[in-house]
Length: 95
Image (tube, rainbow, N blue to C red; front, side):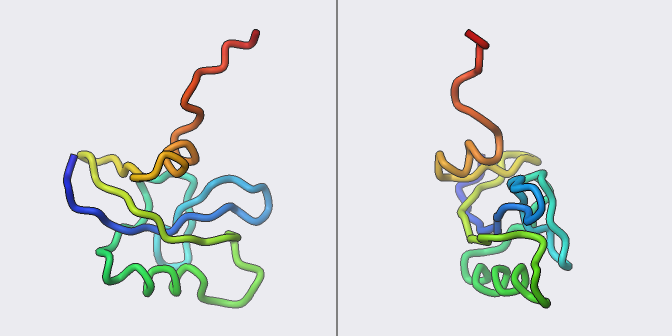
């Protein structure tokens, strides 16, 4: 895993609440590995780009989060965001 902390934008898709990530050029994706990553100094510009255009926007509650690259994977630093990206921390057994 790289030590370089980067930024990306996440939110929830307006029509169904699915966690999505800003991929750039107005596109949002449910796959974190397709998110556009930027250096910390470019985070505000990325957030502004994600919110550009006329409402309604495809995603609500956009927020900048910190992540690192692990090979080809993108891994959020905060536990909350890892859960949003990869699912529960405890497997459901159906009991």
